[in-house]
Image 1 (cartoon, rainbow, N blue to C red):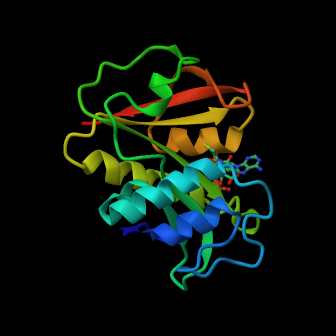
Image 2 (image 1 turned 30 degrees about the horizontal axis):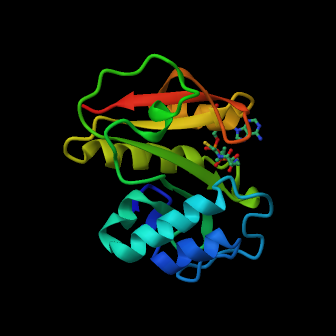
Length: 187
Ligand SMILES: CC(C)(COP(=O)(O)OP(=O)(O)OC[C@H]1O[C@@H](n2cnc3c(N)ncnc32)[C@H](O)[C@@H]1OP(=O)(O)O)[C@@H](O)C(=O)NCCC(=O)NCCS
């Protein structure tokens, strides 16, 4: 578990990833009635992949999606890496990537986050992203962390800037929408 001044970032069990893949709230935490109240930015296939991975090897759950919890257990959003660290990272291996590939020797991990509507603009994403990135870069041998944001997503870009990431290029998401690729190297 990762602790921030106001939040706990808690790995989810396999069954909860599979529930998220079906648009259902996790069972192991107290999701609010207004859970998501909009499209989930994490695609169902990714939740499903996390479920399968966490079921096969529960130790990988710390690299997958986590619930963002208030101390009373209320889930205000979710944050996590897309997968365990890999040699090139998903965004850098993306054929649509255009930019400067960082000179990196260790494995790379890519992350994303969502804060549910009633809890936005309270600094939770900023707090959670900084803590998750700090945790990952403290893990021995991590070469760096990656994230992508839509060009128009100014709040998310503020979050990544606060977490110490910088833009290294562009790519396109599954729908062809242009995105910025963000990077922070390990120590
Ligand atoms: C992006 C998102 C996670 C931000 O969550 P949040 O907890 O509201 O963010 P924070 O409160 O930490 O705010 C971060 C910055 O964005 C600004 N911001 C937040 N929402 C904003 C809005 N609607 N309009 C303008 N600025 C906004 C904040 O003022 C803050 O700016 P600052 O650093 O200059 O003070 C949230 O809007 C969300 O879940 N969006 C949908 C999913 C998404 O886009 N995920 C990111 C994919 S990589």
